[in-house]
Image 1: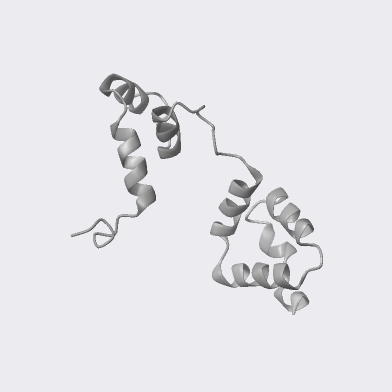
Image 2: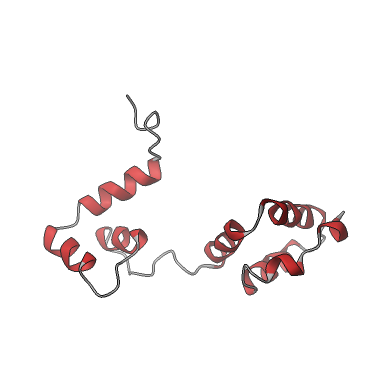
Length: 112
């Protein structure tokens, strides 16, 4: 049986292997800290990268907001992007606003 057949993605397997490569004392100290680290923070530590590496980039933040949208709002966003002359402006709006306020700024009927 393959990892794919078991529902394990390459990214998950890669992250698991990176975390497993951490020395026991480093791993134990990380999970016993006051604030439990994210998977990304543990993977970064295993790869010798700074703790915040890969987080907070405009694309990462934009994707985080998009994932919080309802399916209808995602469709509205896609329509707005595909029909807009200035895609960069839409991207700026997406990264600047919170996920809660984003659906109010996009109007699917206006994009159609």
